[in-house]
Length: 113
Length: 207
Image (tube, rainbow over the protein chains, first blue to last red):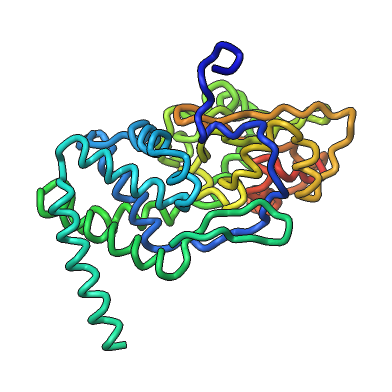
């Protein structure tokens, strides 16, 4: 407990000591846009499958180690996937099967390029 | 695997390396395929949503500010209900609330999000990498004048500085001060004076 207000979450960094601000503007990659696009669609008024608050709850509770090693959009991807699995909308098995098939496609592509 | 993107003494920004980017692309493709298979979305919807994410940009923010600089009644509507006023300009707003905070000769506003990365995305697009960095999130509320100095803005001591911490339901937007001779310019000339950084508050212009 801190100040009787309960423990501070690892995402709650306001006021922490930190170094210089990295003055970089990195390109927004396709997969990152795709994560945002799908998150937006799953949370829209017609679907309401996963909300932004649920995605936040996902990455704010999946542990500080994971939080601090995953990039910004990777956190969102992992959290969105966790929530979809938690709600029984997709299963880990079917997702893993699709990931394996994707890896095969990518390695085939690698050989062709 | 993700790794730290170090720049000398700068705070690490966690980014994916090439293998991490490919891995993430494979995972999101797989997730998309599974969701399509269940009829929860279509590939066309995803493509259209990506196009929409790419479309907002600085000009939307500049359009709002130039309108506020030249139309006092719009400006007062913008300050009282940012979301409704922005939508008057045919800019679709996906955020629940947009709160516009006005810079004056005595007051400067700075926007941050200490918990996450909340940002007026429907107006300004994706936040820049530094905005989502831990260093900006952590320090903007503790030593904002030092942070501004790192952006090249030495705010005079007699100007009050207010820092606004955004959240999922409330996104802030800074209304910069107009140039003192605002009436001499056309709308499009005014729009070119307004940068994204003015609307976040890490730049102030010479108003």
